[in-house]
Length: 267
Image (tube, rainbow, N blue to C red; front, top):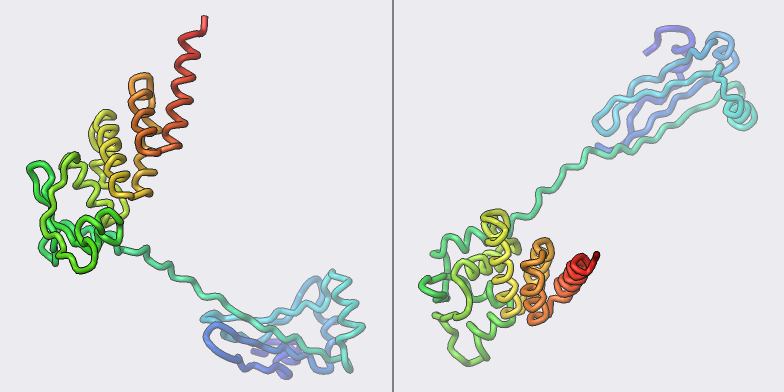
């Protein structure tokens, strides 16, 4: 857009087409036989602008200041870029569009809903204490080799449709199933009740995790119990850790017991 002799010279030699696709574009500002004149006319940092061009959904322009204080740039231009008092500036843009964040996966919520419904394809029932729990054989089998052997058995053997489980409290088994389906612990297992309830639940789940060879759950329960080691719980938790191969919990208990003994022995 010509508004002065200087800008007219720029516009007169400008290639104003925008090349290419949505996310890229280019533009050429061409100064034709007028560089010396522009240096005289434009002082004190004044400059000229090219026509506006579009790239990546935005408007752009090239701004040229012939009287720049940057001596290196002017020297380079004079020495190697000027041809008959003319030169051109080519600007190539690649615009990165705003990246849309991908929503986190919801499969754990979907599988959790499948467990809660208990009516959608449930094909095995567990009797734990006085309660019954409906579940899905192949989900359990993919999560635990012990469940796989217990409910599917060897090839050719009829799959179990009803399984009685002893030695686990119903509330602990419910939390275990929740973890099987969602890979998380239910809120009531970690956030509700007093410290005694949380410790009891974590202990029960650790034993169940070891029984069903669910190493990640065992590690999670061990980490929970590490935060509840004190003079009252240190020895019972040490015995639990030793019995079920929770080495991190065992080491934490040993350190806590040593600290307690050191305090008792201190004058």
